[in-house]
Amino acid sequence: MRDKTAAVLPRSEADLPGLSARSSVPLGRVALLALAVATLALLPFAVTGYVLYIANLLLVFVVLCLGLHLVIGESGQFALAHAAFYGIGIYTSGLAGNAFGWPFPLSMLLAGLVAGAVGVVIGAVALRMRDIYLALATFAFGEAMQWVFLNWDQVTGGPNGLRISPARLGAFEILSDRQAYPVVVVMTVLMLLLTILISRSRLGRSFRAVRESEVAAMAMGIPVRRAKITAFGLSAFFAGVAGSMFATFSTYIHPDSLGFQTTILVLTMIVVGGLGSIAGAVGGAIVFGLISEFLRQTPSYQEIIYGLILIGFMMYAPRGLFAFIRDKVGGGTRG
Image 1 (cartoon, rainbow, N blue to C red):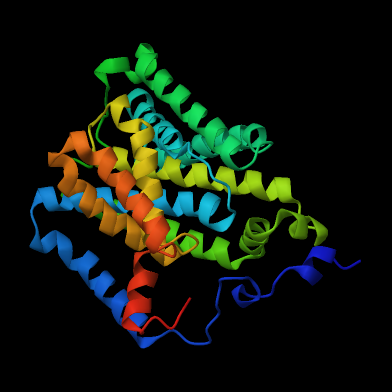
Image 2 (spheres, rainbow, N blue to C red):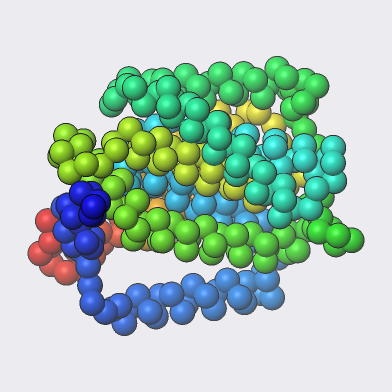
């Protein structure tokens, strides 16, 4: 018997509101992709160690934003626990290396799986709620996890933080940002390709159907609750992998960097880039990641500035910075 959902699910992104399918890739995008590849390849030979640290950090933000894109941009679930899953990934990877000497590919996989498993459990509970109640529930979980990171001295080091052993593979140890850079780039590309595959798959179309209308999705035979939990688990998996990526080039982690401010930072990145857009998540992570680095000199005003930027984009450029620029360059022909 033919699966009913196969008959009703959209066959392409063009069948869903706000999405378009194109038969060919524009020349501008090809040129931009070539420029990005050339920049990533040549960067280690042209810059100092500090710039490579910033590049590694921006790529971690890219993976974090891709994960948040899956749960908010694709499936429309307003979750605010991303920093908690990121922290779980960092501590899991760091402890696997410190205690057992695991090579970084295994510790990275473990970090993603542990964070994803916690995400599935939390999602199964929290997704009984909707809208503001879901946001509050996931915010509460994020705050609870920061309390755990701050007070579980025997495991996380508590307020003293945790020293992380250098990531290694066999006899090779990653001792600098320059050595970590190829690993971080490869993982970012893999996670980006995974995001694209998910988005173009039947699962991704289910996510977007749930985002547009849960009632219509249920009428089409889509298991809405399962789709939501899957999106939540995948988002947490991405955050866990991002945490492990951070642990490859950082030797120290403190719970203060895993609070609500980090979630707001990543949320602002995907809003700036454009909700529901993979390219927007990547571009927003890079653009706003650089802005946040410049704002390190004014820590007292960071949250205020982030909030003002977030409000401004939601009011005047809800489709994101790049869509706003494209509309202005194109004469505002698009809505």
